Image 1: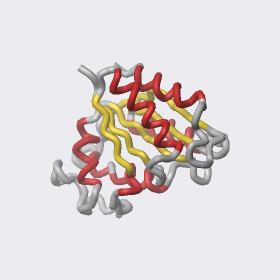
Image 2: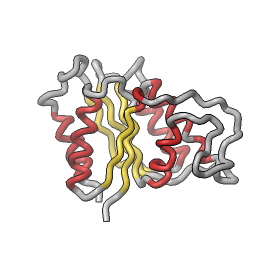
Image 3: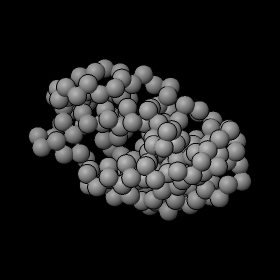
Image 4: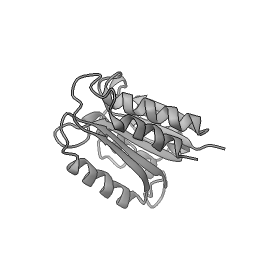
Length: 182
């Protein structure tokens, strides 16, 4: 039986370069027998975390704010693997991804010790340039603090306009990473 994978796609362009990478990753992951659910965060109504520490009382709807995160929470809780997909914005992840990820703290609030569920994860990024260092630093530290295990990263630079990613090696890298999951 395959793994359950959730993709949190923080790109504002549903048909952009980040989405081309997630499409190839998804194709490979599904061919390997995995289940994949992708959320296009830009199309969702997700408020920023209030830092109120009032969540965790209802495991089915853990945050006190009621918005589209209620669509993500059940999929995230069941997922074995979380894929963080984003374009590079000002040398880090997009606001859409960061906002949604911050709100996942409500799941940790369901645990009396604020422990996050253990997951495996993947970072997928597209960018005009090649300065992924800050994003990798964030991702690596996030994994360390959450106790997660990284399955890999696909970082594709040199892609600004929609379609620039065509013929880039990173598309096959994303496909192969998805295909390797079993």
